[in-house]
Amino acid sequence: MNRPLIKNDDPMYALLREGKVDEFNTAKNGGAKIDMINCDFRSVDLRGLDASGIDFSGCYFRQSDLRGIDFSQSNLEGASINGAMISGTYFPKRLLASEIELSLVHGTRMRYT
Image (cartoon, one colour):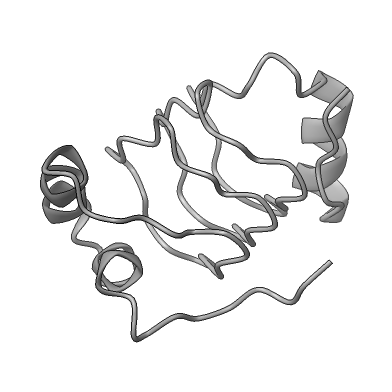
């Protein structure tokens, strides 16, 4: 598994790191290229994110605010959510509750069934 990356040269990633979720969503809906694989979102507030169709595999969401995000149409394989706020978050059906709990409590990388 690759280490999480801070891709400051990626304008879409930078929008999320800077808390500009609405601007990200607008650009996404406008067809902007999105590459979030192995990204570091440590302590980032992502509430309101339109996550549909985004590949977040290998991402690091330690202590991020993910409340209310619908990840059901996203790829979270290999992502870690240690200490994240996940109230109201939808996860892909292929992710078992035990995988989510292990990642939330112990920081393990989530595996799909």
